[in-house]
Image 1 (cartoon, rainbow, N blue to C red):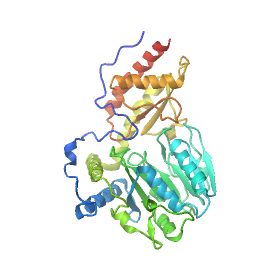
Image 2: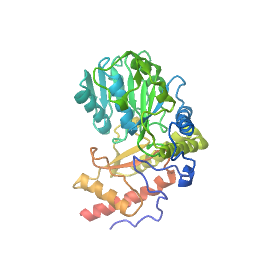
Image 3: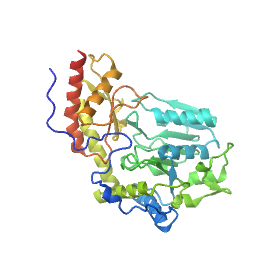
Amino acid sequence: MAIAQPATRPANPRFSSGPCAKIPTFKLELLSDAALGRSHRAAVGKDKLKAAIEETRDILGIPADYKIGIVPASDTGAVEMAMWSLLGARKATMVAWESFGAGWVSDVVKQLKIDAEVKEAGYGEIVDMASIDYNTDVVFTWNGTTSGVRVANGDAIPADREGLTICDATSAAFAQDLPWDKLDVTTFSWQKVMGGEAAHGMLILSPRAVERLESYTPAWPMPKIFRMTKGGKLIDGIFRGETINTPSMLAVEDYLVALDWAREIGGLPALMARADANAKVIWDFCEQKDWVANLAVNDENRSNTSVCLKFTDDRIQDGAAFAKAVAKRLEKEGVALDIGAYRDAPAGLRIWCGATVETADVEALMPWLEWAFEAEIEAQA
């Protein structure tokens, strides 16, 4: 007989891994100061875009000599800009352990067609970062949003590397400690840990990356939306808020509000602590149950943002159908929205635990997860 429904429901059932939950204090009135109907090139627009850049620098602790730009097309656009603009000067190493990293591999190998070694690991596992030749340009994902696996630290990346490190950090920034001295290009989007609106990406360049941009011209034609240099020099305005294309000033305002919230609660240490606390609820739950487990093989590589789970019970006849049924049951009850595993990932669930999620909501979800599991086991019997 199925267990009774839990008495407590999450106050906010939004556990999507992107776009993610808004900040806990969010209300539309907070966006009333948005520069709507104004040119992003007007003083008010430039000021807000520049503020978004400098607040990002301050909260994340990005070095003063690193360039930060707001670019089109979310994190995807930022990664593509980096790869199209910087790769090809030397051999590359493409590192992938989940679907988005695999996408970057495909773009470099099949579209840019440059000399590249591909290192891959299966879902739940990770490539040995110490096995990589950092005299090549290395493209990798810090946190696998679709696999729940992250780089534990940047210790394997040498300070005296000759190549560039290009890091997709979209589900890591603001929740994990990124070693800026080990990262030459870092990208993320507002829609992940900060719960901002989608469409815009952040591109962060080290002095070494800027030097490459100014000394190397790719062999392929460069779309206007990717161009970061003119006459062999960096277009510095891009990194002062003079965006390549027209940004949404409503989305900019939303990001500024989220940054204000982050500062109010204690900055990066508080953001990381919130994500850690959220993830720990699920990790502890999995340790107590024999029918569900973290997809990540090694504990040190478990993500604290996109926590991916797999069902391990022998009674499950069709893993994909079972996982979808559990997710659908939870959504129907209004206790967890959008927590099915990514379409290319192994069957299971993916629960977002970034800083905008309240720990009490994750705690309230766990009994419901067990309820849905037991209900589906009974339904298939």
